[in-house]
Structures are given as structure tokens and as C-alpha cells.
Image (cartoon, rainbow, N blue to C red; front, side, top):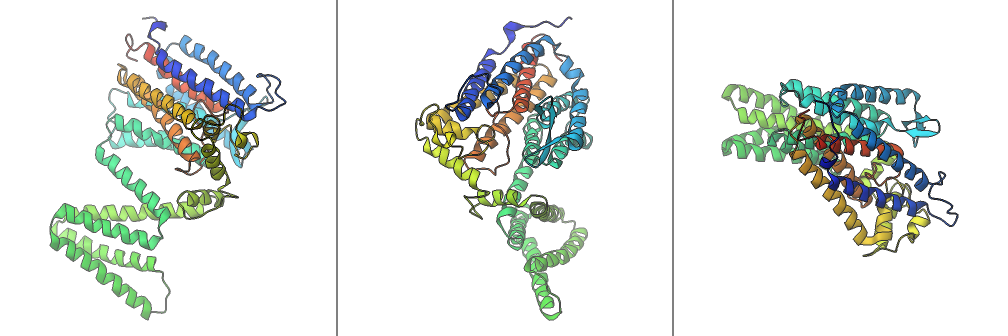
Length: 473
């Protein structure tokens, strides 16, 4: 059957929400760049003129997306993914360094960021793989495959280094949850996210003591035998004080953290003997969970202090309240809060933002575009933006669930995951609820690569949705 363009089946609600965000986003980029030397909206020396060209270009691309046979997105998903990976490798070798990250190609005076399109390519590849008729997502083979699909581009982006964009790929967990990820996996992920945050807050010794205490509580809930808990606790306590005495007698210096780890290692030997002798499966489960938690916390602590740069560590510590620095590393966040707060309920008015005009907030047309909204449009404007974004997300959720094609549904959830992650993290970042990691607000932030990538992501799905009643691929 020849592919046809079903104009009447295009979801115009999603299109209107997209246009609303695009227009309002451009107005705010215009507000950031506008000054008394204003000459033309097509002045390419300004961000708003440049962005308008990208917006018009995206409209042309949308027409081309609908002109292409929709089945092409399925058949070319893997080649597109392969090209994206090659570009990510190439940019590390031949890319232009901007803000200490080798993330860009500069072609004929135009900057191109491959990592933005890698999100699109990964969403297509995941949809192609998971929509296979013989694929069972929670087999080890499938889990390894999807982990590699996500991990490879994320790792290459992290090497640039662009940790913010790399972190976006974790948002695909929403897709997996929809496709049948067990609830216990989600619970475990939530648990380890909690450990991640607590690791950054507590010193290692206090963290391990807390994890051991949690392990005893879990053991009590699982076994429901006081004897098992008491014996396990007694073994741990005995080895702890024995290790403390030995370190006092022997001519060696160890920290409290090392004492605790030695005591746990010795206790684990005894636990394993008891598990083997009495078939204590629940104790083995708790012991494995405790060991994994401690290993994970050590990995987080090591990576935090050895992989993140000092200014990145400072940003995290400022967010967690461990440090205060409103003049240097914390300057962006502090000025962002001032700008948003100064807008009050209805804002200072369009083109009247003093924080914006005087450039107090760096990157205010890209990562911190939400500050301009807050200052000039106030609580009313920021609420409206959030409502439109939420409306788009809800609409996309509805569109995903009405798909007959498994490929279209999975791709739709990939799109939903990426937009949700960017939207929630960007806004949380500008108001101090998340570390400043430098990711754009979809359809709002200045930048051709991100704008075109988000537009392509969205309208490929709208194209797939337009033929949902006729085709299953």
C-alpha cells in the first residue's frame, strides 16, 4: 500500500502547543538581546535573528518529515544511530572546543552539536530494537543490548566533557517502565538514587553506619526472627570493637571508616559460613544489598572527587547546602534566583527586565532562559509556561497510548522521556532545586542544534501518529 499523507489525522493540538512554546521562547530570546541599537528581527548578529532563522528552517524540515514515507524512520533507525555514534567519535577528534568542552563542529560558520541529535538517534534505535516481535525486554540479552545503546552515546558525550547532556540519557528509564520494567527495579533505582544523594551529604563513616543500620532493619522485616537480627548485630559489633582494640595496640594508623570496613569484611566471612550452614537465604539477600550499597557509595564518592572538576563539585555542594559562594561558582544560581524573584506576581513587563538588560545572569538566553520569563512575566508567566509544557507532555502521553504500532509507541515514550527530563531539570536548575548542569529548555533556549533536534524528535512522532489508523509499522 502506498504511503499517503493524512493531513486530517495530524494532531493539531500538539502542533499548537509546540508553536505556542516556540513563539513565546523566541520573544524571550528577543527580550534578552534587545537594546537601543535594534535594527531588524533578521539581524544575524543577534541571538533573536539567528534563532528566527532556525525556527523558519525547522518549519521547512517539518514539511520534509511529512513528505518522507513514515516507514523510513523504522528501517533507517539503526543507520541513523550508527551515524550519530560516528559523529560523536569524530567531534572528539576534530571538533571545536567551546567552554572547555569539545562538543561542536563548526561548518561554514555554523555550529553543529552532534550530542543533541544523538538523543533522537537513540530514541529511534531503542524503538526499533524493542519493537521486534521476538524481543523480551527483561531478558539479560535485551537488558545488555539496551544498556549498550544508551551507554555508548552517553559515555562519548561525557568524555567531551558534557555531563549534563550525558545525564539526559538516564531519562529513558521512563520508556522502560512503560514497556514492563518490574516495580522492584524502579524501587531499587530509587533506593540507589537516595544513596547517591546521601553519599554527597555525609562523611563515609557515617554513611556506612547508616547503611548497616538499614540492613538490620530490612533483615528484621524479612526474617521476622529477632534471634537472627540479634546474632547478626552481635557479630558485627564484636568485630568492630576487636578491630578498634587491635588498631590501638598495633603501630598502624587507620581511620574510623577503614575500621568499619575491616569489621564488616570479617563479619561477612562469618555471615557466609552461617548462610551456607543454615541456608539463610534472606540473610544472603540483605548481605548482597549491603555490599552493593557500600560499593556504590564508594564509587560515587570516588567519581565525585576525581572525575568532576572543582567548579562542578562546588555547584553540587552549594545545592546541598554544604558550601556558600554567591560571587564565584554560585554566582549564576544566585543571580538566577534574584531575577526570578524580582519579577513578582505579574513581572516587570516585556523588555523591562533589569537583570536581563544588564546581563547579570550569564547564559540567560540558553540554559537560564527561564530567568527572563520569571523577571519579565512574573509568577503568572512562569506558571503559564509550565502549564503549556505539562499540557504538551500529557498530550504526548495520550498519543503514545493510542498507537497501534509498537515502534511508534516506544519512540513516543522516548520523546516524552527526553522532553520531560529537559523541562524538569532545566527549571529545577534555575531555581536551585538541581545542580547547574547546563541543559537547554526545549523550544525556548537559544541554539540551532537543540531547537532542530527537539523539533525533529517531536514531529517524527506526530508523523507516525498521523498514520496510526492505517499502518502498524
